[in-house]
Length: 223
Image 1: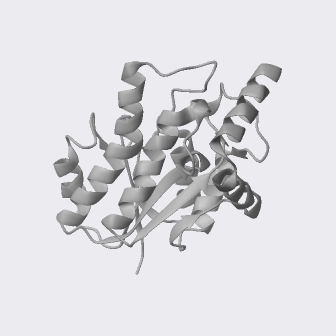
Image 2 (image 1 turned 45 degrees about the vertical axis):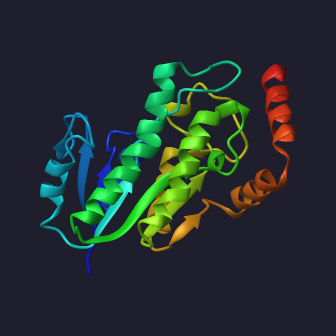
């Protein structure tokens, strides 16, 4: 059965790159965003979820990809304000989780939910604790509502959202990351963009949090 891709947060750099791949491969898709150039324009994804459902209910085998993300911390140089903290949790956790739950409760024909997560979800740490915690919550709660999911645990992707952050090894361009998503779309549950990122993730999981925080603080000082 043909897929109908649904791009939520379609104005993001990563989504725009993925959209180009879909067009090149003659794939069907619907873009949903707060930007006026999307197929469906909204001001608030959850508050207007009924309108989104009405747009999607006539299609089958929906592959719903949540590209929406927000990152407003990069300690010690950037600490999130109260509004940043609320927005980080709302965009990275509340929207994808609540929309997924509502789509299922309204009987949409979902072939798979796809989420863009981060290695920061493995162990929320000093540098981006609030962001990592929001991704951690998403990864832990989605399996409770559906088994039809795919979570991409990326490292750094070079986009507008991360342009002020430090250069790190194995960072990906948005074009490369989009290709990985398209290539691995048939997989399930948690996947990594590369074997090297997977190994790094295992190291993060086993290293004491104090060691990770001290290492990142030292890197920031050296810069």
